[in-house]
Length: 390
Ligand SMILES: Nc1ncnc2c1ncn2[C@@H]1O[C@H](COP(=O)(O)OP(=O)(O)OP(=O)(O)O)[C@@H](O)[C@H]1O
Ligand SMILES: [Mg+2]
Image 1: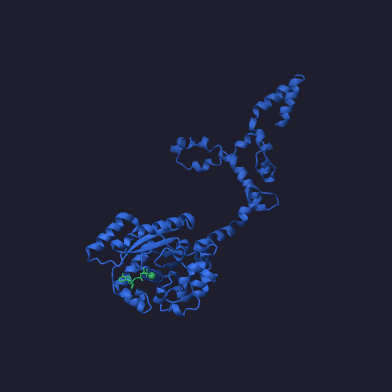
Image 2: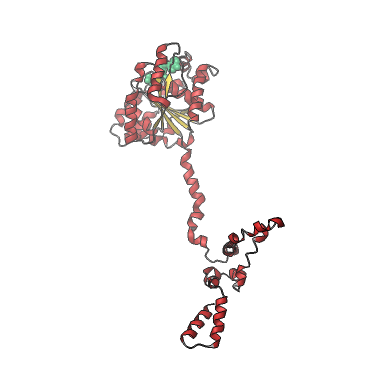
């Protein structure tokens, strides 16, 4: 085709010759796109050239190929079948290119493939990257149990909810961040006799794994000297993040880390809220108990803005509910009016078992597994899990 064009122009410019007319006629018969396959880089491939039709007319030959797929329709429908034919026309143009690329890859003839030029590194290393990205997802859900008001069932809730998670097959670590050591005592451990405790972890950067004891759940223990930790940490750089740092060592070993906090909003509680991604706020169903919630919310806001933007309130838990009194019912109503969906549906009613179990160094779920007291916390565990934890 190319030589025909050149000859034609030369002849027209120089002198007319009878053969020119003949050539011009030939050229008119040849379709213009006849050039396309010859100049296409794909045509460099031997396979492509072999498969590709040499003459212009033959270029249309693939057209009939799709026809048999449409053809099986009955003779009576032939007119309908004939109509889609023009739509199928472009298909044969694309087909030879795809075939040529596939054959190249199969041969492995050392030539560079289009896929090599696109992004060979991404393909080669994709599986390794996926494995690395998955790893951090396995870290524990860290829940802090906080309310600066004393005696609202922070410790009781930390232990019994943790044991309810463990009953369901989750790996749970409890952290006793309260110098009173009530959680430690609730598992039958005397805080006065503990040699290494969270004090050493927070103040002296001891690995937290060294102070974890195995009981109903694993527990990072408190000792009486934890009371001095806030002052000892006060000059430390990154003092608010000491617990968060320490938990990194073990967070892949657990599904839940449950942190019990003291009845204050001091540095220990700030450490807990900084390490946590969720906060459960136990509230005794009395009007006076609920007034402190605003102060707790302000502290949490300060932590979200400065230390831990991810922390949020998982739920407010009405505890020690005495359904016989009007006052308790009204207190729950006030709670729901002010905090809406943040209030758990689960209710922890008053029961003497909660006072008895710690004396035996056990959770209520172990002390009296079939009791309704134990079931209050099993229900709470279901609710927390249904909310998307672990
Ligand atoms: N549902 C309940 N019914 C009856 N008694 C309960 C209930 N929950 C907790 N208690 C009892 O109330 C007391 C205070 O509970 P707990 O120690 O859990 O509160 P706390 O918020 O951790 O207190 P603190 O602020 O001093 O750490 C304990 O004696 C506990 O046994
Ligand atoms: Mg407590």
